[in-house]
Image (cartoon, rainbow, N blue to C red):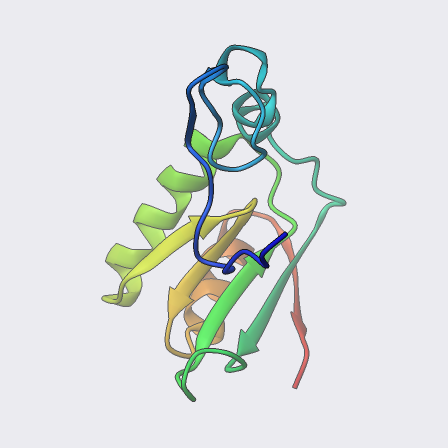
Length: 121
């Protein structure tokens, strides 16, 4: 059997029909979307960390520990993007903001009553 490339995946099978691109199960039986929309339970502490690994040396601020479903995280990310004046995204239950925005985001979250910790270096 040939080794599959990491950037290719099966999305349709002639005997099964449409497949979930994330887990490879028949789309009607897939639970990925339900799990993603169920939300994450935060531990009460929001952690902000700066990452550069795998990003070509570009800094990214990652916000973890926020409770809420995908829609709530997306709405909060929109506020962060407007206040910081940068781009960002919601990925796997975390918010990623372009650049080192830890101080700005920390001030915004503490004003809302969150406990915020700066994690990492």
